Image 1 (tube, one colour):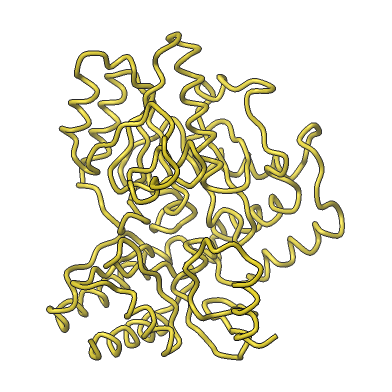
Image 2 (image 1 turned 180 degrees about the vertical axis):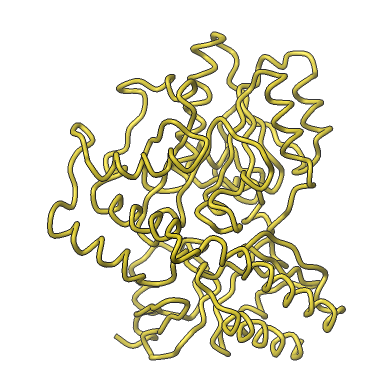
Length: 403
């Protein structure tokens, strides 16, 4: 089917929920995509931080193929070997002791909200259900996760939001302390934060912010939930971003890169907190089914493979990409307001809306994402090489020259 026909039929048959760009990928390998019309693209969106191993990584593809021949799906009423194996991998390489599997990041955050409130109710009784999140945060689009999201533009038209959510400026420890220490702090059960606000414009926390947040949560008796849907699975140069800050959360959510392209989410917690869930408390029909677990196991094992050193490579490539983007700020001071990021989650903040830059990059064979209106967000696969970064930055440079 030709690309124009695909676009035409999309408008005819699909609900209009995405501002789609004129690209129709048909094949992918590594850091490259090919569209239905044969155009080749360098992919620095990576499925929005999903394709950590690149497109169609052989180990993930083979794992899916083998599993598809054995068993696609079975109910969580029964025990699943690969589900247990995946949970063990996550536990052995994180703070967590228990795992719940679902299908996406928004579902993982819904589970985290429920778990935090259930834990507080069991321990303290009724009334302690408040959750503090950050302005400019993004936690998903179902009602619980949408209510937790600190961006009113996502709330419009869907009000009223669920009660019990309060937003503070990201990185402002005094604002958080004030909420936790003012009269009636027993109404708060958890603080929910992203290590880096990815969707909110790749906003970075102050260096000592999370250590102070952890201390505040401990002294106030509230749980710390980290949303690592975008920052997890090696994206920042550590398997999980919380490791950069020398802390451990009580609950963590994962999705995006966990399945290497397969749809899977996970809710991780300490045994003490996880104990609030009992049979019937929470469920997901497709959560952690054999097919997606096989993909996730292959993804994690590849990330952890000493011979591949992919996470360490991501850290080095993140530094290299940050340096190249900083150079763009020097060359284009009128167009570029600043750069920031962690690992292979990097941003180039422009002085004007970046939608025209995204289109200019597409015309030259580069896929890059625009978020927060003026922020170009770069999320290439963790296997990206210096030559590909050079090519991507050169294309951005060519587009900026035209502005």
